[in-house]
Amino acid sequence: MAECVKVIVRCRPMNGREKALDCKNCVSMESAKGSCTIKNPDDPKAPPKTFTFDGAYFTDSTTEAIYNDIAYPLVEGVTEGYNGTIFAYGQTGCGKSFSMQGIPDPATQRGIIPRAFDHIFETVSVADGCKFLIHASYLEIYNEDVRDLLGKDSKARMDLKEHPEKGVYVAGLSMHPVHNVVDCNHIMEKGWKNRATGATLMNADSSRSHSIFTIFMEMSNNDEEGEEHIRAGKLNLVDLAGSERQGKTGATGDRLKEATKINLSLSALGNVISALVDGKSKHIPYRDSKLTRLLQDSLGGNTKTMMVACLSPADNNYDETLSTLRYANRAKNIKNKPKINEDPKDALLRQYQEEIEKLKAMLMGQIPVPKGGFDLSSSDGL
Ligand code: ADP
Ligand code: MG
Image (cartoon, rainbow, N blue to C red; front, side, top):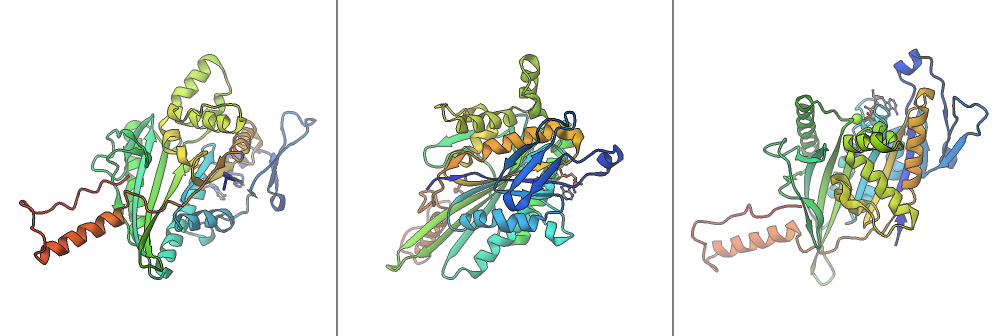
């Protein structure tokens, strides 16, 4: 069954700088209707523009509410074997990291990522007769280079490969087993630090790079006949680069070229979204950037996808905010066809179980132990 990408908008409160500049508020929302209205501060006679979304969260909203309303069913789907993607979009300083990572205090503002960790391991702890295998990976795309934030060398350039069944993946991306929420947080912090070091060395910052934290879940249970079934779900948590340069791609000629070079992936994402929703394009330019290749399944593919578009209320950000609203408005028309990943051929659970059976048989002398011992490190994750 096709379902659209779920899009919500979230407006942060006015920050100190905007208050000091005596900025006026140009954004208003009617949360019950999911609508967001913006007024042009330079043209008071122009009619305000109104957009409607799957949710509109104003300055006093909590991440807890956003999670419960929109993210919860998506993450629940991942624990059932669907793929899910949650991404935050918007101008730098408008609340992408606030929404994804969040702050510990007050607890209502803990981010979507730590809430997803809690949710997944809560499900694991109450599931009866079900075995789970959970791994995490963390990568960054900076200047069209993909880097493994948890790898031996977090600056090394990684290649994208395509597999007929698995789709596009990063060759050699390190996969880390996680057994609980503490493991997840540890991995997240470790990767975040590598990202920060990379940032000072390369003079990059989070406004110019995209990061994708992925949780791979495999679960197995036996049907009535005792036959084992494995399902696999994948959750991508994406913190995109700041969109302010993307706004410039409305320009033409040299400025368009410049903006495209500065963040090719973000412009490509806009082009993919446009091509998906205009209904005329047969060709969707996924191959134009690393980000769109990696998120191909999340945009018009078999994934449940949610976008949090982050806004500033201040009138001096009018152009950027309008551009974010238009982008978000297009994205909500993308149709996906989520499906459960049933008995995937490359399931690690099955590989591990087969290895264990083999080892048991060797121990019991049923099959000979190979010369040079055995190798358990052969499984190469997605
Ligand atoms: P981004 O990741 O989009 O560049 P941040 O999430 O880092 O922006 O937010 C910038 C600043 O605004 C941070 O200090 C953050 O705490 C604050 N902020 C963002 N969104 C909210 C919000 N909804 N409520 C309160 N403060 C917010
Ligand atoms: Mg950020």
